[in-house]
Each structure stands twice: as structure tokens, then as C-alpha cells.
Length: 498
Image: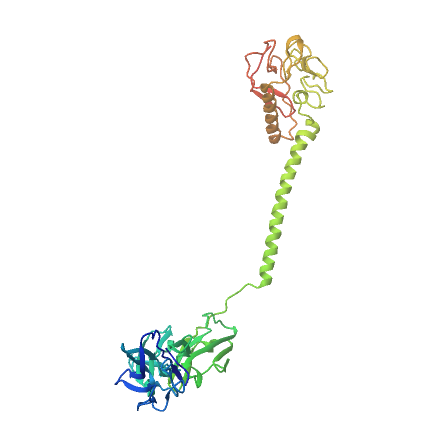
């Protein structure tokens, strides 16, 4: 039981008193340490009595006059020393004495506080000894408070308790570690827990560790070349307490004329040979001096292509690529046109049908009279050789023998009743081979007008065997020995004599 007010009431009542005679009631105080003491007595015939005790003058019965049925008492101006057991004891007949016990627990809300301790960072000279860096106190609490620490730094906590007035307790906890410059400014929290608090009370602190300046120079990119402008070095320093002075100097003792210094920044307005030196930055505070240095090596200026040159190069490259593409297209178009003119549009070779390949397309008459042009039979030609003519409207729809009745060359065969049949695969293959052979000859000897169609008397005379050779006249000769001539005619590499 807890009674945080200045006065507390302790209740007592006797129940189930049937057949029992109540004669007297007494209140007895039993401290945690010490003897039992009577603090209040009531007898129906003699009234109330308050014996000498630490509570005399602060204790009384709650009713006036008191009664055996309700002998509750009140303690005013409660003190921490009033904590203990309070016994309500009845004298009865015939049962004897009966009692009930009430415990009075006194709680005192502590006064909590925390503080950081400023220390100096450990060095080789001072040694690595742990020191107190934070302290947390919970004073005059009852019962004693519990203290915990929350931090990321590596250390240990120690706690001690001290007895205070009125049975209160003061708890002191200290956090200790080996201080380093890296720990300065880090968070540390003290948590105090107590029965009188709804939740732990937290105290956030920053570690305060003092150390001499630690200096670093930044800004040198190892690319200081002659003529480079506005390059800078920055002197960065951390220290606790804050630095008092920052000084720039060189190892040679003389600062270059092109150098400009403003606080912790050293600027070289234009790099020259004088900047080829070692720059030193010194920083001081009350604990000592820290410094850093950087050696500058001045380089020769590098040739960097300008943007205009890069753009010009890109434009020229693009133009050259376009010219190459245009030239390639022109070559392809020209070749295509030459082929079309040579095979289709040339007056000497206007058609690639059977008539044109064998007799020419309107050319002059052959010297031996075998051509179909206006020249007719040439003088001195072999008039005994067979002459083939192309009759478009004839029943054979192909070549016919002008003098001798040799079998003409035509595509397709004839079925029963003389009806023409469709060309076979062999016919088409022969026609395609003739076309390809003629193209090869034309490409090699396009403009040569010499004629090879004159044969002497008794010489070999061209005979063509139709693919199906219905009459069997030309059987036995190969189908693939044809050779195209420059004037459009086709001859066989196999000679036939008649």
C-alpha cells in the first residue's frame, strides 16, 4: 500500500462477532528495524489513549468517541520513517486476542539529473586509461531507482548508492571509457526508472572530448599545368576546442606571387613554375598544433581539342560517309542501266526470245546468208547448209527449215494430233542456260562487232536439237553444249557435217 498524501488512514474492523465479547482494541507500530510500539489504545470504559511513540501527536482515532466496531486511525504529517507494519489487535472473550496487519509503504519520487564530463583525448603520453565521460544521478528516492545507459561508444558503467534522510536513497551512475577524438560529439543517454514514474526518464547528452587539431589539405588533383587558373587548396581541420589560428606556408619559405590566401583557402590565380613547391597548413588550439602538407608538381599544358575542331571533324566525317554512300549507289545504278541497255535496250540485242538469240534482232544479214535481216544470203556463203527461219504464226510456233526439212528448235513438244504441249523443265533449263551464257559473253565482248557466222564450203554447219527431238534427226547430241555468240546467235561446240 502506498499513501503519497500528507495524511493516511489505517482502517480496522471486527467481523463475525456473534458470541464473542470485545473488550479492548490496540494499534501497534512495527518498524522494519526496531521494537514494536503501542501507538493507540481504546477501552469502552476508560476511553482512548496514545502512548509515547515516534507518532505521538500525529496519530488519532478517526471517530470521536471511538468505537470497538470501527477503531480506524489517521496518521498526519506522514514521514518516511513511518514506513512499516501497523497491527490492529482486539482483546476478546472467550477467544482471546485477534489481530489484523496493515503495511505502510512510503515512496519518494527521486530528483533525477544527468551531465556530461569534458575530458581530454588519450594520447601515448597520457596512456589509455578509462575516465568518466558522463554522470547520471537519482537523488532522495524511495525505493532506490534503476539507471541504465544507451550509447554507441564502447565503455562501462558503474553505480553507487548513498542513504539519505528519512530512509531515502541516492543512486549515482557514471559512464567510463578511454576517450578518443573520434568519440567527440557522439550521443549518450541516461535512463532512470522508478516506481513513482509512469515511464523511464531519459537524458540525452553529447560526449565532450577535447583534442588538438587534426588537419587535412584537399583540392589537389595532380593536374596542375602551366597556365591553369584559379586552382585552390582547402585546409580542413577538426579540433575541440575550436582552432584559434590557421597559417599557410611553403617548405621553401617563400609564397609564390600568384598565390592568394583567405582563411583556410589557398588559391593559385595562375599556375606557373613558382607553384612547383610544397604547401603546408598549420592549425592551432589551446591543446596543441596540427598540420598537413601537399607537394604540387606543375606539368606542361596538354593539348585539348577545342569544341570547334571536334564539331568540324564530325561534319567532315559525315560528309565523307555521305559521298561514299552516294558513289556506291551511283555505281550500282550505272551498272544496272548498262545491263538493261545491253540486254534489253541495245538495238543489236533488243530481245532475248528464241528468234532474237538465233537470228539477231533486225541486224544486217549474215555474211553466210544465215541471218534473218535484210542482207539476205551473203555471197560466197554455203547455200547447201540448212537455213532456219522463225515463223510466229506457224503450227510449230518456232523454227522451221527454210530449205531442207530439218527439225526446228522450239520450246515444248506436241502431243497426239499435233497439239502443242507446255514446255517441260528441261526446256526451261535450256532457255535459262542460254540466257546466262549470252550475258557472260555480252559482258566480256560488248562492243565487238566481228561476226562468227560465216563458215566455208564443206565446213561444219550449226544444227540445234529440240529438247524432245520427235523425229530423232538430232539424237545423240548433248543439250548443254550450246554457246552464245556476240551477234545473238547460238552455236554448238559439237560440229555436224551434212
